[in-house]
Length: 298
Length: 252
Image (tube, each protein chain N blue to C red):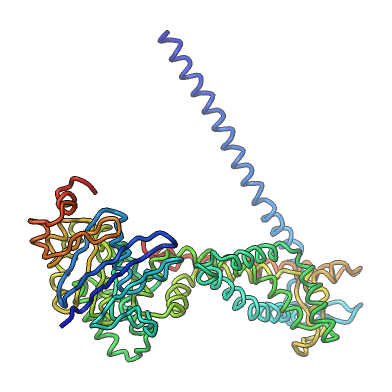
């Protein structure tokens, strides 16, 4: 009897250990396979794009069709312009909605209207970006009768709103209610508590969220196709068509010219590095700066 | 002659649940008054009514009068924000503002009220931290995060923060229940100092604490004030049987 029981214990433990090892192995495999695409995309883009990266690429505008050379300086500046416009629209708008959802919105954001807004934001974030582009096309491009940087910036800005809004809301909610009460108990009006204590108190993580959403939209192509359109020259005004890295890459990639293909790869490399640098910067600057101490109370 | 702070027929509710029933109390200037009672008896709600913080919670409401120097702070033309500058509060959990330095945690009440002069701010911060018996421990690291301090220090920081706007009443909602015995002793010691300049109303779970620090004690039960009197009398010769049963540990 004793003997049997011991056998049973050891056998079942051996079996459990084997299953444990197998499952752990599967998880490690899944994790490895998940980062594999990232590194292979990155490696491939570097390999293909590296050769076309040179000084001219960063400083010159595209040459006329048929001529070898030229660069993407206008597209680089265009992307920066579009992202700046998008940020001007998306950040204040998104943060305002987040403040409404977490701090007001009827009973601290539990009201019915707040629920509708939150649901809409989630819906908006899952709408294909090309639909947003179409919407802005109908709203702005047709009205202005031309493609423009403003239209492109608006399309990207609209795409930023839900991500900025929802991440900011989550972060504001992480600040416990008694911190707000402590502010109110000092005889401060609620808006001052929200702006200077709650929002300021979580500015690090919120900036991280915003930077990530900027990185996200800076690579968007579809919403720009019929809003910002493209431009082979330096931009001439915010009400004019404007070049951008993603659209330029797209245009060059589907062209029949080898030189343009090489430039498309170089553009892709530049875009990937830009996004990568933004992510890295965000992490280094905002996550190391005493973030563990930033969460209030206990 | 009226008391500094008094309540008349003060009742409070969350939605349709009444949690405080017709409380009448007077608090004299420069005294410490303790409120004891079992969990859920309404003692926290009561002091949160005294600075109109209760109404900030969803569906919470209060009726009756709270008189500060004879003026009803629930009158329709009274701004609750102004009231809270006169009646400060310290909470159960130490809650320094995140991402703010020790200095700014203390100065922020004045700063956001529009005080810009550096000299005034520095002077206020030093005075408040000294009053809260924290100055010696933090004077060399005023720029460190408030949240980097220990729990007991954080709570004294919160006391300094509340004192910086110079309230005439300081409400304390179980200020030591999250602290270790040594920090608790420091804060109790501090309270006897503080009552020279400010009137204190403290909610506590700890009857020994009430007996040690307060001049008057009130016993609350199920939203009603059962008994209120001199601390020494309430603990040695309670008038109500329920008070006696509670302080002798037979329930609660």
